Length: 214
Length: 129
Image (cartoon, rainbow over all chains, first blue to last red):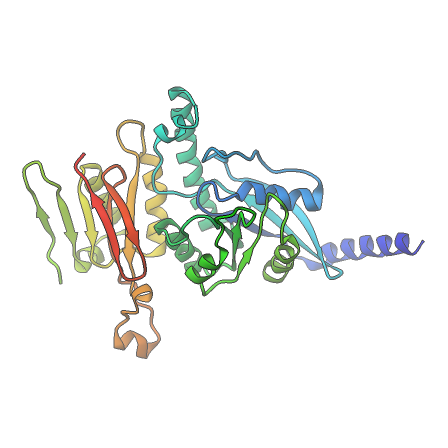
């Protein structure tokens, strides 16, 4: 009975929050280099709070070639509801060589098509960042060197737009993971270690999302 | 101030050194065009003062539009900024200004490879096509 009452109170509180807040949910872009685990994270967030998914995960780079938005994700933290739109974006790079896709077993034709779509996807991601994003979750693979030009450039672009940014050091389930190196590389920003695949440290992830983007 | 030069060598690698003064005279799209035309012609372009974050964002976007199989696979870009090397001028520090000056090296992705990068040193391998 008490549980039912609490649920009812939460529902009413949610509805009134929406009615009177007068503000649209913030669009939070999930950015980062290819294969950092952006879609795995986006799926984890969307699945945890809506039961749905946002995109297909793959170990082949540039699986996500279109920005995808999932609206009205309601994240509950400490009795408060934070509503955000999650935008999963294609991995950003300055080069795309279709021959790299052939190493994953794709035919030349499929690799060329994937490369063409990937170039469009990167351009689209940059456009979203300039025009339509209110905050950024920057995802990095903790097993890789974070001090790359693409990361430095993108963080610089995000900073110049004065967007709130959280850095997520992903893949801490892997032996080679070194989230400390990511923290040291971008000391000006909050870094959260996690495994989007295993769901490790997701409580802290949601706490930070609520604090930064709520 | 570095003067714009072009070092041409038969069977060698051409390098454009672009001064900050030259960059100041150009619009964003003129800068991007100059960089991509140079890189697509197989040159290494070195900018004395680099690009703003907004211009870098546009450079990525335009580069993506120009990639095509077997012809152009994109660019490799490396920068060294005063903020990362602790090289800000006295006046900028005094005025609390951030200098946008950052040495930037851009080349064809199939010819330039970064071998090492840290806050004070970049080592790159430049090969002929």
